[in-house]
Length: 153
View (cartoon, rainbow, N blue to C red):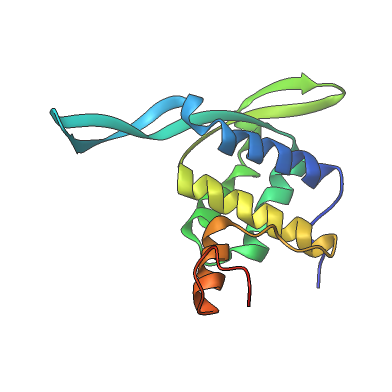
């Protein structure tokens, strides 16, 4: 099996995607949808654009990890041409490394999938477990037959 996680490059990529996910709503609005509010229909932003600085190696690592962890996801197919067209984007220097400022306009669940794939690849490479989410914790407790807060068995 070919390793998909490389320390340094992938750690920086995970940091950038995590930063993107945490500050998702601070991006430029790229898509809105009408929702029913108490005052009537309201136009609510649902898709934001973020400009993420990626080096050539980070873009290749992102694509490699997504192809390994989420091969059937349509998002993986959308990310595939990024490495070929990277030179079309604005370039700046980040320390000694040239990076390309790539605009990503995805929905928040799609960004969460990218983040989860990166966390799984890191956990697999470092032989650790992925942190338990609240949803999986609640599902496990319900499967065991107890209430959520019923810790005594």
